[in-house]
Image 1 (spheres, rainbow, N blue to C red):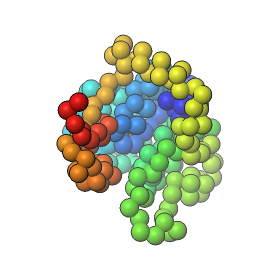
Image 2 (tube, helix red, strand yellow; image 1 turned 120 degrees about the vertical axis):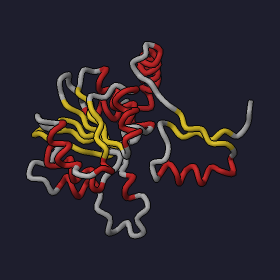
Image 3 (spheres, one colour; image 1 turned 180 degrees about the horizontal axis):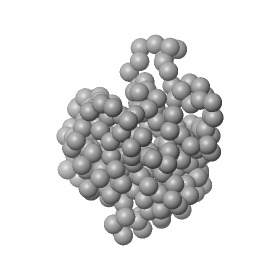
Image 4 (cartoon, rainbow, N blue to C red; image 1 turned 45 degrees about the vertical axis):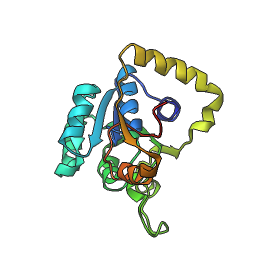
Length: 204
């Protein structure tokens, strides 16, 4: 919520792109953007996830990065450029997005999951490297939710109202047993889950 509203500074009519759009963070970011009057373009891996993002979450479009030609697909989906890129992934996705960022664009950096399995983090190319190499460097920064801890009740109230009104939908992936948590976590990093990954440890 605050990553989009405070770092992204959305304005109605702008275009937002968010990767990992079927996940817990990306799915909410895109729906928030639509609620605030923006065009929301998602990026996800596979036709099933893209269908979910468009048909169930109501994004304007969703691009399957696994099917290739992501840069060309982005150009077609964002003819007026990109005003906000909500960064969850990094890597090839960020390289495809970067040339389309408009002057004055904002990039809230929530994470960059494509780098999480790198064995040598000193050589990893992060979103900061990619964005700072642009001629027109967009406003961008990493954020943590505790920056706005005193405003959590405000966010909870607004998000709860939008969920109750059907403006924000969600899906949960539930795994059974604490002993399976490590494998479920590895699956999350590989993009196997839809929405929020949960682990059920008891019936009550």
